[in-house]
Image (cartoon, rainbow, N blue to C red; front, side, top):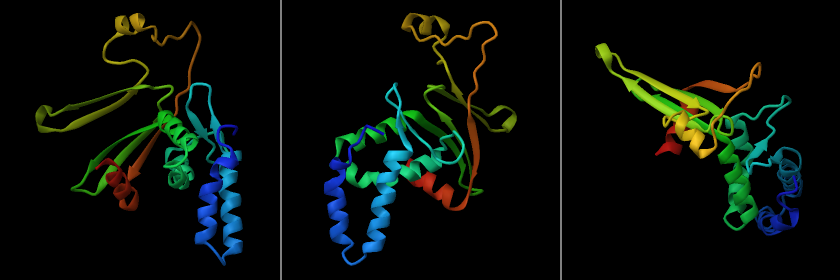
Length: 184
């Protein structure tokens, strides 16, 4: 990956070795997997974000990339490089969730913030109904003039196209509980 050197993880791994004395096979497997995650699945991008390869297709799934990086939260408190890696991942991934506690269900919308850096949420209570809109976007509510002035107006030329990946997930059970824990 080139962003985090194994030497900078030595203190953390030393602590793990002390706690796992007598579990040589388990310790060997942990160290191999832990370091392999950095070496083979974590990629620093030019824009400062971090891409985590999460499977056998070229995709980064929010839940999976978060799970792959979660073990690095422990050494992050003592390691600036790991904190930067986690911050880069957070910059890249984004999600919004709507939860109906009464029914124990939720809907999670996942998208890459790099391509869709703005987000709008609206609701309507017309006719006694309740509708909520969650809209990731490549421009804000401030309009074209604002973005032209800021120099970040997103435009496509003639015959150009872009592909954006959005993932919708139904949340229930443990997944719903986890999202609720993260948002409190």
